[in-house]
Length: 202
Image 1 (cartoon, rainbow, N blue to C red):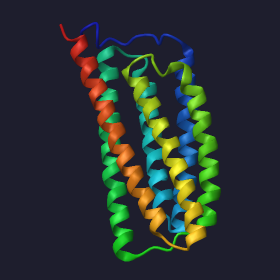
Image 2 (spheres, rainbow, N blue to C red):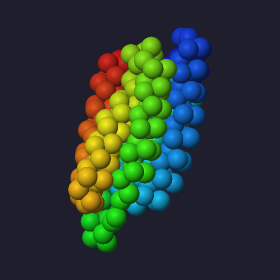
Image 3 (cartoon, helix red, strand yellow):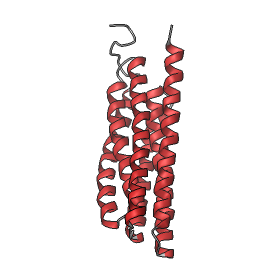
Image 4 (cartoon, rainbow, N blue to C red):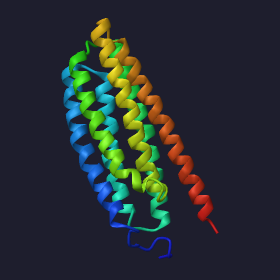
């Protein structure tokens, strides 16, 4: 086993605490958003639920990798980037299905759940703020949380437009935009992991 692969003590216990907090916040939020998305027939809420579920997995991976060497952290970040791209593809598929089959999103539920999601994601960003520049693995976790907040704001606007216009189009458009934001974040994480891997190479 190389020194790079050997387990290491985390630089601070704050990193572990921040990741644990963000993990459980996103587990609860993902379950709530998914249930609300089914109830409200909302592509935007389901996209947000998938986004937060993938976040929870990434935080769990990051929590494991934070005690390990640089190679493990780079691998964890790479997996995070791939997961964001898979999320983007899943959301695109859901938007396409709802476009073909039709949807009747409920604006009030979308708005209420999205306000709750914004509060939870702001809390996640606050606990991760001090660790975001520590290494490639934690930068990936920070990117996920930023994507979540952007997605939440988009879904909130969609919910308002759905109530105002009585149309499913704003919800579908926001679902599409969330997929594009997720794809962009995934590409950025993979690029960061590649740069880190090259910089660490002998």
